[in-house]
Amino acid sequence: MVKVKDDKEVKAMPLSNNTVIRRIDEMSEASEIQLVEKLKKENSPCKRMNQL
Image (cartoon, rainbow, N blue to C red; front, side, top):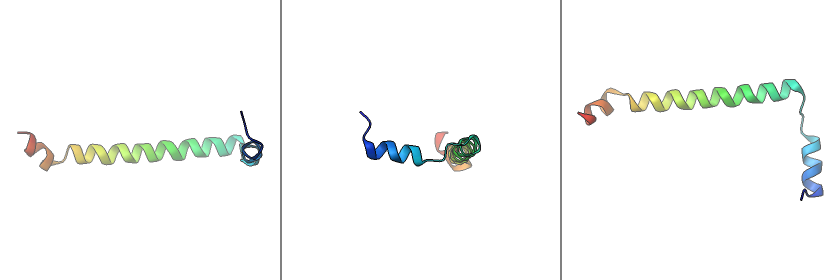
C-alpha cells in the first residue's frame, strides 16, 4: 500500500521525457565506467603474471 507521504514525493519528481532520458544516460555512463575500470584491473599485466 502506498503511503500518502510517498505518493506526494512521487508526484513531486520531475518525470518529463528529457529528465528520464538524461537519468538513463547518466546511469549507463556510470555503469560503463565501472565496467571499464574493472576490466582494466582484471587484465592488468600484474594480474596476468599471477595467473601463470
